[in-house]
Amino acid sequence: MLVAAAGLSVIPGAFGAITSCPSSPSLLGLTTYLGSGNGCSTVDATYTNFSVGTATGTINGVALPGASTVLIPSALQIFLATEPSNPRLLEFSSPGLLGPTSQNGCSNISGDLGWCIQGKNDVLVSSYTYTATFSNAISTFGIAGTALANGGVSTATVFREICLGQATFSQGCANYLVVQGGAVNTNFSSLSFSSSVNFAPTNVIAIRDTVYLATANPNSSWATFLPYDTIDSPEPATFGIMGAALAALGFARRRRKRS
Image (cartoon, rainbow, N blue to C red; front, side, top):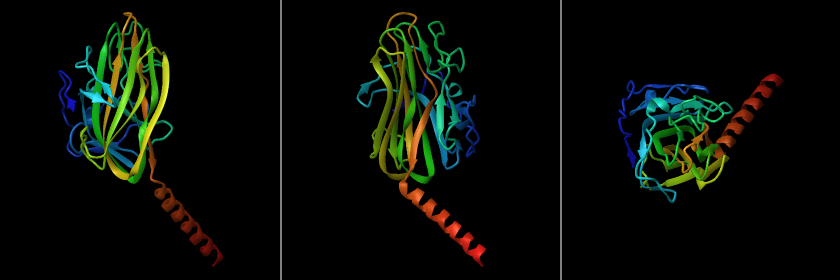
């Protein structure tokens, strides 16, 4: 279930507008991609139909709090960019008040903004859904990133839920899978993670990402995420087809040279 954030207006851009996904670092928020038919494309994937808000209930056995105690990031505050090391994939971020830094703009005096909470007993649940369509079928999907926290027991975890072969996300979909990274109710300062799931090849998936942050004591406590990345893997047969095509091209060139 995706619930609209308090005070958040979902305003779609021009109908059917698909642009190239921006390179990292990017300050282009998800506002550009809200609504049916809007989105961006990478080398072999198109990401569309974004919606931003919060989530309730239980994900992967973790019961989410009933409500956030801080302002939920709007579409303007959640940024999308292609990964620096792999421009066919995406990374997502939402910096704190201090802007993009080694701690995502978060510190013991930063206050709350984006995916940064600071203070005693703060809670944030920030979600967004979207559709990913791949030119070549994929058989692996997941997330990789780093959770940061300081001061007592904290939660900094991200869930990536997917519906295989679906264009619209629903937690009750027939082919539902979920991966999770980060920590829940743990005393930590920096935790890198990489989590993925394998499945039968598909070209379309509906996705919901949920960032869940929570602090305990003292007032200087904070928790955040660095920009986190997408993991995927084209179905192995795709590589075989590509290899065969390249081999055939090389053979044809050799024949032309001999003649």
